[in-house]
Each structure stands twice: as structure tokens, then as C-alpha cells.
Image 1 (cartoon, one colour):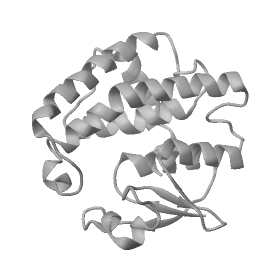
Image 2: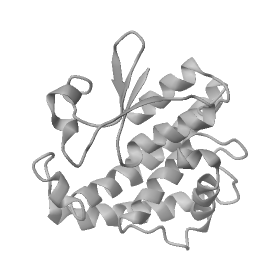
Image 3: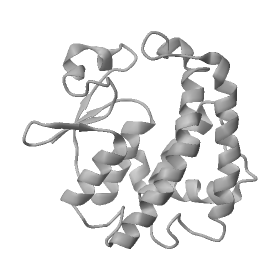
Image 4: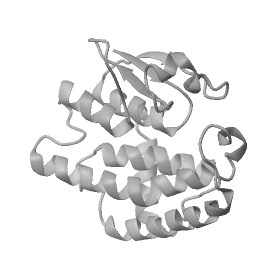
Length: 203
């Protein structure tokens, strides 16, 4: 397998996930700043022009970070980071869905349409007037999510999972681009800090 890597939280999520599983990825860097992801070579790997992409041993390509993580889990089931049973997998996917839809998508879109506007203009549709509203949505939903994880070590209780990696990577990135996690969200802050302390986080 070859992993087409770049800067940004999406590839980092997969790198951390793979490191937790002890999977060594054969990485090929794609320069987003030079727009290599929008050039023909990368578009042949992922027509959406996004990173990362994973080239399988049979020559096929898959993209979308949660899909890549699901594939790696199916090929390398231990340690189970999505789940070892249907019930565990459903629980992990529930938390992943809640974060992705309510916080990560609006938060990152708000960044792309504001602080990242210069980089993303001409690559994707950009609506800067909507950026503050998206950021406010993400901020509101972080407080909503914080209440749901009160008293938990990880999103799935005592079981470390993809959901925790997602929070550590994406909430950490949002923090760096002007959407700081409110310290009042003490439950989420504790989870994010625990993720960042793991050796895999530097992958």
C-alpha cells in the first residue's frame, strides 16, 4: 500500500490511527501549497482532489479518512480501534458521526472560508460571509458534546477508539487556526490532552 500524505488534519488522523495499530505506511507526500492535489497525477488517484488517498496492493485507490481507517481496521483488526463487536463498532461510529457532522465540517469550512480563504479561493467555492456562522455552530456543538462525555475517560468509556483520535487531531487543528477549545469544555479538553500524550500523536 502507498499512502498519499500531506499537511493538514485529515492525513494526520490516518497516520495516528495506523501508528496505534503498528501499521507502517509507505508515504508519498503531496504538496498542497503548490496545488499538487489539483493536478492530473493526484486527480487520477482521487478525482475529488483531496488528501489523503490510499493505494491498495491491487492498484485501486480509496479516499475519505474514516473509510481508510475502516479499511485498515478490517485488514488489521487488532487492536480494535473501531470495535471488536457490532455493538462496539456502532458506538464508535455514533461518536464519529456526531463530531464530523456537527463540529468538524462546520469548523473546518469556517476556517477555509476565513483564515484559509487565500489558499482555497479558486480551488473550492468560498463564501466568507458564512464563515462566522459556521464557526459559531462548531463552538455551540462543542459545548453540547462536552456534556455528553462527562465522567468518561474516552468517548466509548474505557475503550480508546477512532473517535478519540478524531477529537485529538481535529479539535487540536481547530485550536491552531483560531477556534480554540473553550477550557469550560473540561471533559473534551481532558480527552484531547490524553490523545496528545500518546506516542502515536506525533506520527
